[in-house]
Image (cartoon, rainbow, N blue to C red; front, top):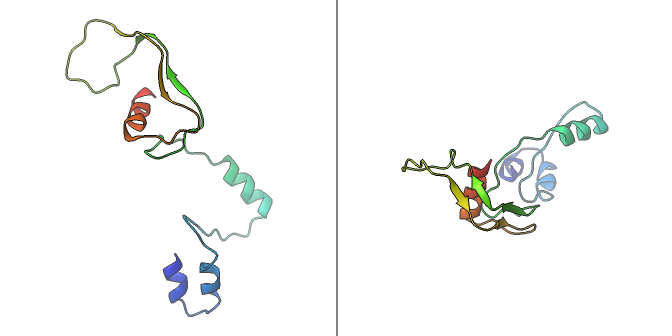
Length: 108
């Protein structure tokens, strides 16, 4: 977006681009600020945790029999799959590894 502003004819747009950092978007509307903020606050789209995301909760797989139907597997288990001890997948504040993120996707 910065490149677009810097290449525009209006010289004031490049001043706006200097204020932009990271992933930035611009929303133009005639709505009141309060309405837009409320709409944005209510707009939630669930997504899976991704590698390097900071997790905001501790996730533990409790000991006991687990359902494994969603996990990719080439074996046909006719037995029950049992976790012997609680398994801490990640803790609040952790930066997720690739393996943790993949495991969390399969736990949904």
